[in-house]
Length: 503
Image (cartoon, rainbow, N blue to C red; front, top):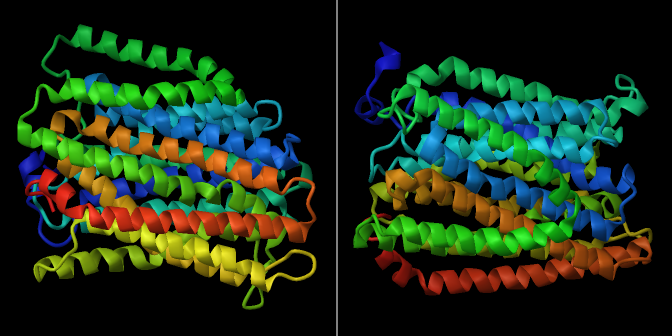
């Protein structure tokens, strides 16, 4: 029967994609609707509803998102050692549903409580579903990158729908006649709760078809002892939520945490490396190089939820080709729209190049990602030359900037997830995936700081002056991204040696 498939049978699939990828695709799609829908609302909600100024809202956004991604390392660790990928994912989904429901009831008064549940829940959910995708493939299978690109399209389908609908409804540019004004933010956050339930149901109804992928790592020990360890993990994760709430609400605590968690994760990895061979450890060092560079990529890219959200609200007009749209909704979802349109195509291009032995290696792909990122931010800068006297500029040109950046993301994010699974031994795969998302946490953290600096420079300025300050800030980010891309391409021969046979 299908649920009794062995790992070998699953991995020996015919065609481009294993059918199990579809089940994980849809589960992740709805979870990303929840995540990106909430992400798009955070800064605008904090400024408009909680009364924060732009600088504080950027810092708060960076801290909140940093905690979301930082906790994926902890979630990956407990999945590897105690719960297994499946139970960890299920528990994370439950916590995310609770957090979203709390936010939908009263987002103003329960904001940080709801965020606390969501942070811990995402930590248990996010790294583990990506690890399961990696286990659908045998080592060395050239179809893996295409599979992750396809999976990433599912991520962005959810991000597109949730990223636009939630903020458009919350700010009142969509469904004004259906949703009462005083309930718009409640409904926006409520969408996240509904789709997370759909995500969890999708996974629970299809997990039997995953064979042995994601089961508990403690099946060989006594059942009562295993259950006790699992219960302690559940209780511990609940007890940590109040601590998370306090630390997220006070960004200074986030500074201390970020000073600790990164070095601690690297020390833990070094401790684990003593159990591996020299060849395996070289691959892990290569993975660390990718992880470190990805921090810089996400610090720039994730301006989307921070400074670019405020830029969209204050400095963009609301039409593209005569169609009225929510500027921040476009900012929050345009990238996902383009990923859906081009992710599968890019994945097929990698396959086509691989068959002809001309596919660029992972390091070169990362370098290209930064070059595309630089191009997109240069376009954001260039919007200043199309501004009217009131400081409003072209939403269409801004959207074209996201079109360019999308190709950078497709060269880095799905390829990076795939590389993490290829470069890490199975026993530490979820931890490495957690470190990959921990790098995103640092990216989010620095994104908040960069956005806060731009906001501070434009404080008390007119709308036109504010546009110029933001645009000039994006020009600086374009230059830094260009430098990072050139450096990566220059060191590609060294990193390629560390990667051994991994392409």
